[in-house]
Length: 120
Image (cartoon, rainbow, N blue to C red):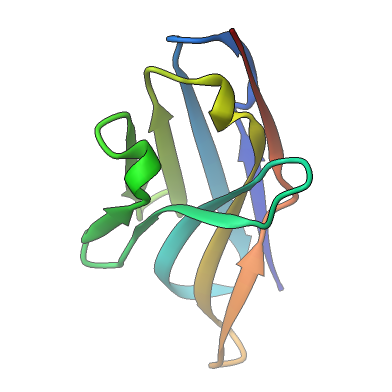
């Protein structure tokens, strides 16, 4: 079994910064793509940013130039550096990872989510 644990959420004023972390643990053989999603109240979950095992990244247009995704494979951790935060960034942020685990199958695992609140 694999577990993802997010941390780093909180409340900030507009223009501020937060750094989210998501650490994976358990029977991991390899982690492929790691992705951050977010879900605001009353809205569908949306992709924020993703990073492949080779380090290629992509992100939503709404966060380009403000958010940066990175990973530390030695720690099985993905990060989301969020700068110039806006009230519309307020959401629960979820980590997702495609993991080849000890079963020799690849599964998509989710974290429990971390709340980010940006006040104007």
